[in-house]
Image 1 (tube, helix red, strand yellow):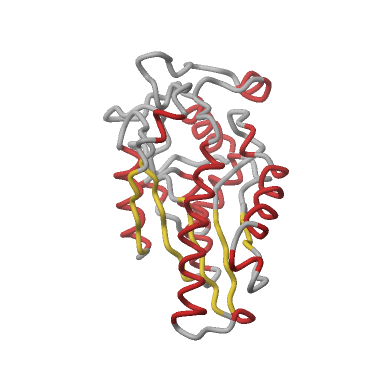
Image 2: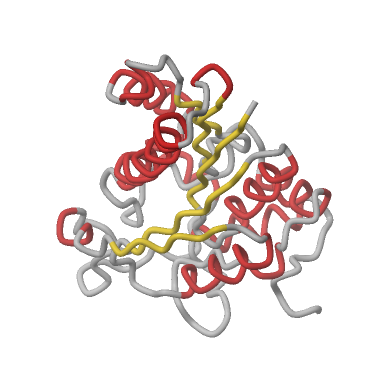
Length: 244
């Protein structure tokens, strides 16, 4: 079975862990990083270094026009909205913050799926591969346990995405190949993700999770707080931070 995979690689802890895990699972993996007009490029730079470390083909796609559509967010309109600092975990679970980018994951999944389908169609129609001997897997590091309350990080969203991609694609309708949207971290706590990243040897030290683009992580945004809590709960030092 030829296992072709595309991963949305953000440069953060979670997607880097998923990438390392997929490689170990025997997937021919291609990393896609989307520049969607976010406020800084630190995460894109991190994704490039991580992809090189993992030996992945890496596509950085400029879709910066998206910020003009999904403008109601602190990540696309920092002149209008401030990244909320020091939110506690209970508050994160109860409200959707202004760092939510409208329909970002829906857009991301469509972009990555288009690339994956092109790879599969080339394998079948261009190289003579058998539809019965190929898997199409789309990897995304969504998490519904320790997260900022985003609606597009929940399992029911990805159940719907799987069905939509199958119904709307040539590989799904003509070749009966399902889009296997894999979310291996969706039910893990951040502590479990931190531990997993170390256990499988992911290049965690190269990752960038902060919503802001300073020289060092801000330590106060949701992403920084969740990451710090995860490593602390796992009893681990964060390899991306200077040793205490």
